[in-house]
Length: 334
Image (cartoon, rainbow, N blue to C red; front, side, top):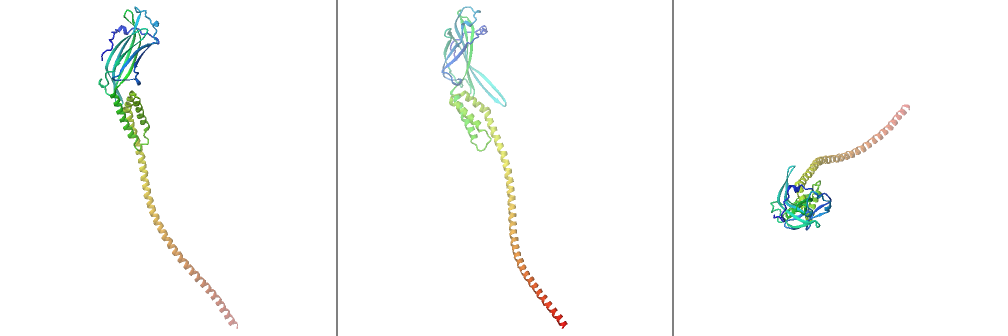
């Protein structure tokens, strides 16, 4: 990328010049103002650099000749690619220096600010970066006093601000990853059973990413996807496995109970069969008992009659015997 304004050559001695210490601050402001710390490829921004809280009377200029004439904003804007990948429990990160421009701005002491336009002419694909990687754009400015003899005075303050560059390719990539997450999570959440599986956690992750995409916070959406891809998906699989194992153990218990139930049911059927046989035997015995009882009652009745007849006969014979004996005695006495 071409330099916007030629940069004044700064020597090592200049870099070691004392910095003004006070409540001075340097503000870097982009217009249109980036949302969620994102700037868009192919967009043109007005960059305004301004000093606030600067008081010239508090600056020690005893080591410098001449008097302050204006302020120089020495700036660098660099593009850096950033990525990483996991293997096992380890993580590796990497960075690429993609591009850099230098900016030399001058401002009056009374105004204390300067501005310029910058257009992001390339997207991440132009820089050779993948959609899952990041392109960071860093604005760094050092503010110096410039003396009336054109020499460089003390450094007043420094400021750095980093934005993440977003482009349409990254947006489509994240929308596709959201769809992938949605399919996976909904498939698991809609599955029957798995009562111990924490569906709410993964439904919450999906909802959070949806909100990020809706709001246009693609930096957060990328972080959510990275966390899901590297950790949450594995946790979800482990959660499913643990839930399945738990339900399998419960099923085995139920199977054992069912086996015991079937065994008891067979024993019950055997006992029922034996009971039915005993009941038939009891009925047969009861019928026999009733028949025998009836016969006994008949015999008893007959026996009672016979005994009564014998008893009456005995009495008759008794009286007849007594009468015969009395007659014999009378005959003998006669």
